[in-house]
Length: 342
Figure (cartoon, rainbow, N blue to C red):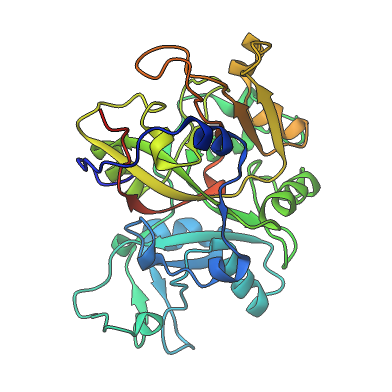
């Protein structure tokens, strides 16, 4: 998240300012601004996205690579918005309803990007071998999904158990104007519920929020992206603060190699969990993606109240925003840390 070893001295801790911060939303980013965001301006090693029919996944990503015969170059998107890539592909291929987004991770040595010509990055390029491409999967879950119900349709789909273990894959289905990330991987199984979720989340502007981690993990996030943690006050998820300063007392990573990441987060329909009044229960720690979508929620706002112990005991802690799916987060970059002066 921010510079790893920065020692910026911000203003003194202001309790009234912190109280205001506990109630506010993050800074919104307009849809227009988001649609113009280039991949090179985000925190990723991805150079571009390519949309393909999911049926060609193995042939292109694992065997033959991507070749064009009728076009002048490989069609790709240098924009960070994957949905924009999917919609563009569907515009030219309206009958395709099962689409996979591939990452372009490297380019051939004879391709050079010129300053100010990002959109012409693939000009003249008619073939990308599989070594330049990735299907987006950065980790595989160890669970046996043959007996774990789909979170949307609540049915077990043994034939898709392997695909459901893949973290990071971007497979889209559904309507041209509102494609949904297909969690179930069974196109006609529970598509309506997935489309409802997609509409709730992406019809609203994203907000800038902050996440602290260590330098090693930041490097992994740059290559792959976020995945849910194993535990937390609202279950295993991805946690964000509303300011860089508030990450200073929320993160559990080592102190000397901390990094603050500024992220765009699509909150969707938000469920509030009140931990400030002392009325929260152990049920909060058991919140999961599956339980949340069944209630038609997409994220959780944890009302934290005051810091329970340590140097800032009794001070306002600042609320936390919690999401449970990688498709709701895009990392913009590192920002300067804002520790409280000693």
